[in-house]
Image (cartoon, rainbow, N blue to C red; front, side, top):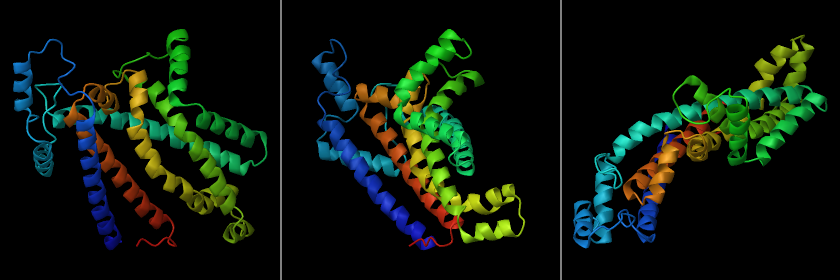
Amino acid sequence: MLRFITSRLLQSLLALYLIVTATFFMLRFVPGGPFTAEKAVPPEILRNLEAHYGLNQPLPRQYLDYLGSLLHGDFGPSFKYSNRTVNEILADKLPVSLELGLWSLGVALLLGLSLGIIAALRRNTWADYLASAVGTIGLSVPTFVIGPLCVLAFAIHLGWFSASGWYSPADRVLPSLVLGLAYAAPISRLTRGGLLEVLHQDYIRTARAKGASEARVVFKHALRGGLLPVVAYLGPATAGILTGSFVIETIFQIPGLGREFVTSAFNRDYTLVLGTVILYAALIMALNLLVDVVQAWMNPKVRLE
């Protein structure tokens, strides 16, 4: 196990270095810059700004200076917000996106597991067909369509929730539901398929022959093996919820990191874009590693090498 984790960490560090390098140079080669959108900036002021942020240095020197700052945990100053650093912005915005992601993951697991278990236990009945229909809708309709429809129905017409903001517990409901529904659909289908496969195993028939109740058979014996496909999916799903929340944050005007990432890309805020990409990449790698370890714990047949 320790050898596997060490190997994965080294691979992750190499991948993170390649991501930083590719993002750094792609940002520099994109037309425009962080100060080109400013109106009527005299050339001497532009030169002073570039000198202040080190943009007048040769590109290899800028790259090495940035890598040196990263080694000390410093993502650099923001080009758009002159009085704030990228570290401060990430620390301010990341908790909002994490809270949205956790609520959405809870919705996805609650809906997905419930529908999948019901569909597996009531195979080829109306409950199975209803769960499949909900899953199909969640898979086929994107969040940027469901989001405005939910705002129109539940916020504008019914007035149950606010259309935007992140101030009260009620503001969490619609964004979490919209984002979670997109991932509840595949979780439902994976749960159904995994359970159906496990329920036909010999040890399940043995448990039933011994007189175990159906609830004990499902939740004690079958669920652990049936959820292995779901556990494998949770790594990329959780990463997708965290990194894909910028659509929901934009629709519902949530002051999270995803919305800030979109704004920084339009503003050519090099350091903020880089800091967000690095943070998201590190989260994805950590989550995938965690899923591999949990999957090996749930299934002893899986060997980590």
